[in-house]
Length: 434
Image (cartoon, rainbow, N blue to C red; front, side):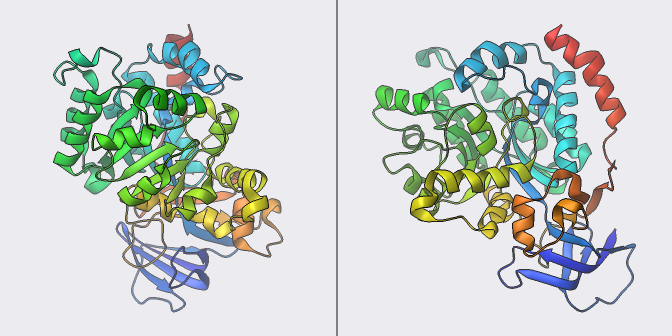
């Protein structure tokens, strides 16, 4: 399908043309084919007038667990490890494919309606997540997050469920939907696994050319216990076993030390900041200025809704900006709105190996329209300032993922919300919570 957007005001994230006013953006199939102030020639299947709206690249949620929408707000008021062990792990033991499909669909609906076009998701029953994401139309880098609590001496990939999950996920889903689905190698975290697992996953990533997705130094206790156990940090002990050789994403990175940030910059690892989840779980604040100074790319994620409690990247942008101002602003000043928007768009796309996050010819057509006639966005003296500090999911009026409009004016075009609600109310919630 071909679509021509007219009267476009856009923040393109393209250094060659950062702002487009009164312009035209043409899409053919999955790609943007032209961007400029001259109307392209030819016929289009649809023409969209963007007067009163602002176009940006679709948001990239670079770390989430979409199916955890089923546990929204469950176990609130706890620190990370109490929350995981006393609430989340017991609830997750009751999940099946049907629950995960319903929870993922709900999570994707929330993300799509708030402008997200691409995600990096780590969760169990990952093939079910893949099928749900494929049908929803959103691009997804998927990982199963290897966990192993057994004796390291007894480890065998043939008997480790998550090793076998890696193999099946890669063989069945990597590249599905003409690249819509990508598979990442993944270790849940240093504290939920051990060196033989790290080595196997790293070798698997090397063999298949996969990026890595790992929770890293989310809490002070996690970081310090690793130092006590191995004499070095989570980031660096994982590096000893080859985990970062292909780059990838390190989620959270609240507590880094001893050259961790420099290591990530060297290996091409993106630190994914999850400010709302980290604040809610009392984990702390990632040092974005420090990461930036060390050359480490930073992207944004929501984490799971159970610890957030939403998939709202507008909220993440605002929280990221404000918490940095409070924690580090006296020494560093403010992060610019352009820096924050880059974390939510082009930085996330680059982290996931996606040719998106920029409105430019040849890029994947992941685009959103935000209605700037809404009261909370009027008047507008600075588009970027309004997007970071004023905008909300309700302002998103169109979501185009991979050249296909999947949400418009409050209507989901690839998801059946009535069916999703029924599945959750009648099956998933009773199964998990009784």
